[in-house]
Length: 473
Image (tube, rainbow, N blue to C red; front, side, top):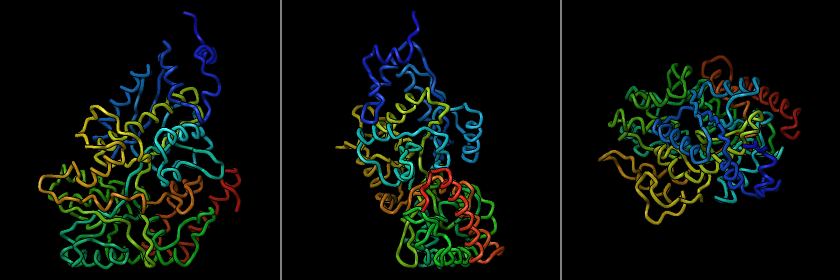
């Protein structure tokens, strides 16, 4: 059989160059290529999911998708702590995986990845508007490029032990940062159980620190992408964290990993954590009596009534420039994943939150009890949050209701601006956790630590401005 080139195939198939344009169907073009006799390979790099059930579903799903499209799909899982360094090494080597999924905006990798504007526009055409927190975590308004594709994200509520909070007169848990300080201090003093906010170089500390800053009406940048960290409200927030550490925490939090607050809550050694529902799901399986005692609260409000939570995990997939040859397959895979997001939500035990709430729920067997009248993924998502299908027998009803409309109080890294490359580097180098930790450990005053962190931010912003990936202000 005569070998046919990609260009010849496009001509023979009647699919012109416009078939690759933003307004066209990436999906249809890839189906055409799937009909060739040449079997292709798509290599995926995934983090090891916090809900093991998800990986047990995703890997066979990916392989079945490959069989349908005449593609050998390989899925490699890696620990969260090794993800960024592994991808950086692949960039240097110029080879590796075709599609890499991050759980925080990989905006600092923009120079090394493909612009995914086409697949984002295709998804919006097929599935409706994307939630803002997802768009702002994958799109750079300065370069007008989508450096990634965000198919989902994870809510970051407060997880608290109701029995402990009842004993100090606050059965509904904290609603403000001040209440967290006052009542968590009482729990530690009277009941010997510490609070569970970390102060180390890890994911959850990064998230908690940002939520605190935003709720104190400050942050690393403003909506115009100007560094604003060095101000009196940041100092106020840092002093608050010092007080929180002195009264509610222990030195172990300086060495915590992303799993540490989960483990502390499940072991009965934490009264409150800022995390997703993954710790709760683990407790349901391992320590049911703890799970039944875990309840949830939305974003804590600061001293002036502002309350924001940092999205816990943001599923942003990128295609490296060295994988251009397989970009069509990777884009097809992403679109099909969104089309099956009801299953993704279910198999993650409601950990995954859709970026496209209007994606349709396909008819037929879905691998879960069907929700009557459901047309969109929003319908099944809200139905499950109304009545948690994974609740234990005898567990209180409606525990997940405070999370139902979390997109209204969840913000992206870089809020109130976008998750630009500078914000990606600030996140990846733990500028904010270090700022808080220095003061909590007594190594610096709040004022000096804020000045140091602000100087680090300005240096990082200047670097990316010089590369043209952030506009100079």
